[in-house]
Length: 237
Image (cartoon, rainbow, N blue to C red; front, top):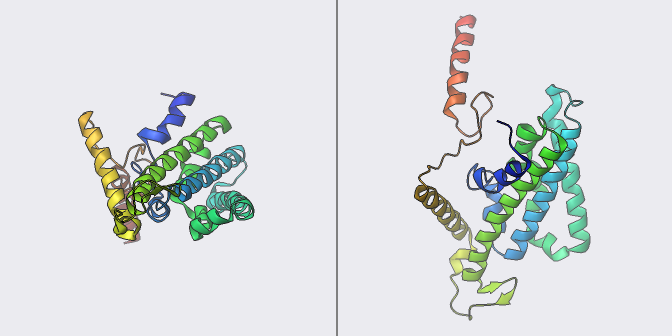
């Protein structure tokens, strides 16, 4: 059944949220979610790259040879990342310093390359735009949500404005262990909410198991691959 435009957009925000459901792009979430300003900047940057690369790849999907599609996707993505870097460095130097290497690493972010491969290369421009926008909003929602808690409890501030008096902060929240703890709490909250609705968390959601390239541990994909591997071994013998 073909999805409507609204379903394509909202799919990335909730049903197939790239961070909490598909478990992609977690490194930048753990590293950048220390302040709300940095998290929001990272979310906007990733969304811009997602939307731009999805549109271009969708436009060129019938022209790009299948054998070199991944290098072509990376070149397109790298172009948009370079544009973002130049703009942020020129107009928002503080944000550029806060994001650091993770801004450049959007090039190899699993979310961006994954949507290029799984969606943009197979669908039209408008649908690809909405998919990129939905996934970007879903990513931004999670990273900003975690950042609000970490900045508030760790620094006692929001957007640099003092909320909690000094001396009541929890220092570990702003450190690496705090990032993992907050991410764990977010996952626990998701599973709890799904349980309340009678649903079960499944990171394989959205995968039909027929591609044979599943990086999510999909059992269907594994069962499809194993018999072929055995046939190859037998033929070699």
